[in-house]
Length: 174
Length: 290
Image 1 (cartoon, chains in turn yellow, purple):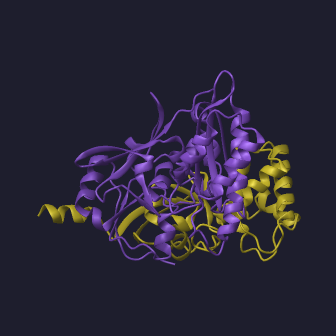
Image 2 (cartoon, rainbow over the protein chains, first blue to last red):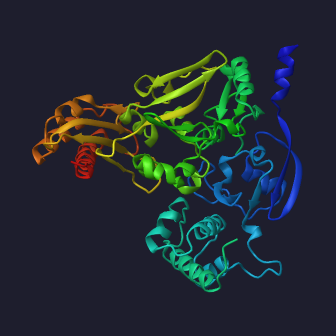
Image 3 (cartoon, rainbow over the protein chains, first blue to last red):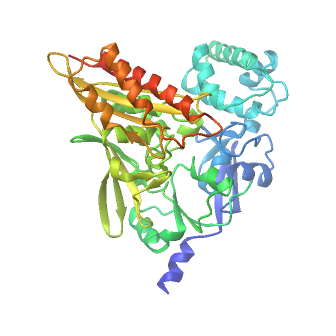
């Protein structure tokens, strides 16, 4: 009897409630579904890309309570009660690009674009913590995001431009 | 990619977690930051029947200064330690080491205790704990055990933890302000697992001879390795070039013959070990107060 009660504490499906880009979702999920797959397959937010699925490439980076994390290295059930921002939450309500996105477009900070959502989210977290990063700091903070097209130079230029514009407009990165 | 089927539970209280683990320990894994366990699940290299998530146990989220050591609770994230003014001020070597772990996205989730419990021989924190001769606290329904680093790490990804135990606290001994310390590692790409690394702490006497030396390595054997032979030969010396040459030649011989893989040959690891030994000893010696 005791045994049965304990086992019931472990479950294969949980009800979770997460806020993603300002929308509250309440959903039953299998406990083994990764946060990245939950975002893509359940919420149909396919802007979060999955590359390596073991934490190396950085494509799946999202903001969890404001901090950049790998969504492939978390279970969706672990995001219960948390606030998430994905690339879909970056542009404004009238689809105007976020200053970081605008800078990436202008500086050609992307080619194929597969790594870009993860990079934008990492840059967002970086600029929130440090509004004036040096080139070395930018390169260091971006070391967790792999890009196979650009050679990184234009990504670094884009981050510099985004940081400059955000400083000028006195906008705190939100 | 999907982890294999498991059952999941995330208790709020340590007591609850311990009694669940007492029952299901043999078939359960403890999930903290998940930065090593989730990839293992994703690649199906691990397939526990039960996953016990300890992230909600708030009583394990603490960084405290104690007599003799800094205590870090089981759910403290690496990033928390990296940002902590207290740790920066009082245990700068720990901050230096943590900054070498993965990338900031990894450190935002990864925990200090989780890295110790995972016991990857190429990871930074097990080598640091071994260097400092630190301890861990393991709790189970039967009480708590305090385990010294050199008894805790027992082999590749293996520790002295029993199936019913949770590693609840890691204790990093203080380094006296007079001591010099250093950490260095070599990785092919920033944030990758390092091929070889070392942590060193040295102290000198009033007449400026070495009176205490600690050095431990990652990546040279199946477990983090403290090399007392090197420590002993440094005592009474002044770390001149001849001594550093001898120490690095000696270090070379401690690289295990089976440390050969797609990333580096044994010979290459030996060359790295010699050079890293020289660098950490020189840097630690330069940082001492005398």
